[in-house]
Length: 161
Image (cartoon, rainbow, N blue to C red; front, side, top):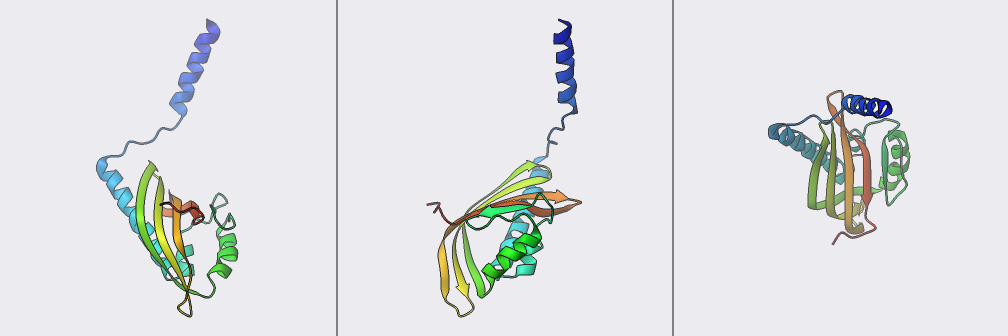
């Protein structure tokens, strides 16, 4: 019995110490979603015109940063620059047509986004060098009052339709 009481106390104490998600009002949720949707649009705008520096500015340079997908997985902004820079060389723009979008608040400072889209990639001669369907998921985190991408995934290997 003594062990049961001690175990029950320990579990109760542990549960009390674990952080729980802060309840958000509908207005707070709407504000966070609007902020992330705006940032996602700006992120996409940068990549549509192959504005490499602007695109990279949305990513949090942190050892936990990870982006994976059809290409090589990268674990830092420096590695993303090294891998993505050559892939984007010679490209003029991307035409990205979102067909499905979802933004989900996981915690007040963590938000997940999904974008399914059709795409065309155009090189500097105006030729379409790639086209198809793709999916992007991203995890945005708020750090010191600023939202940044921490984890992302893109996949154009599997059509979504």
